[in-house]
Every structure is written in C-alpha cells, then in structure tokens.
Amino acid sequence: MRAALSAAALLLAACASERPAEPLSQRAEEATDADACGVSHYAHLIGTPAAEIDRKRLPEHARIITPDVVVTMDFSATRLNIMVGTDGRVGSLRCF
Image (cartoon, rainbow, N blue to C red; front, side, top):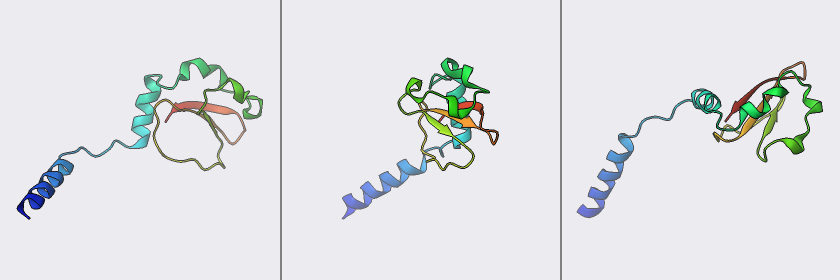
C-alpha cells in the first residue's frame, strides 16, 4: 500500500512541475517564423483565389481554411495552413 501511495505521489509531483502548454497562436507563430511547414515555398499563393490552387502541388497534410470551414485545433508545426479571406483569396499562410 505504501509503495502505491509513493508512486502516486511521485506521479503527481511530476505533473505539477510541468509548464502549461503555450497557446496555439503562439506556437503557430513560432513555427511559421521558423518556416517549419515550408511557408516560404508557397508565399506566391498569397492573393491567389483559393479556387485556383492546385491541391496536387501542396504538401500532403496542407489545409485550405476558408471562413466557413471547421478545422481541428491539434497542433502540427509541419502542417501548412492556407488561410482564405471572405473575398475567396489567400490572405496568409501559417504552420499549425
């Protein structure tokens, strides 16, 4: 019984010492600044109508995100996200 309590206390102590995760926006900004998903290779898409993007030329897990689409908020620094504005044109590129 004491061994189980000791193990539980160690686990709780380990969890308590962890830093809280950074907000998604901050992690995405850092990943984008570091070009973790290859943003620099696709910068030419900014201003392009989303309908004209050849998806076959994008990385495998790239997402085109329009104002009306729902996306998961899981973080992947190497995933290219193409942000489309209400005008249907690419407004920015981000890694998350």
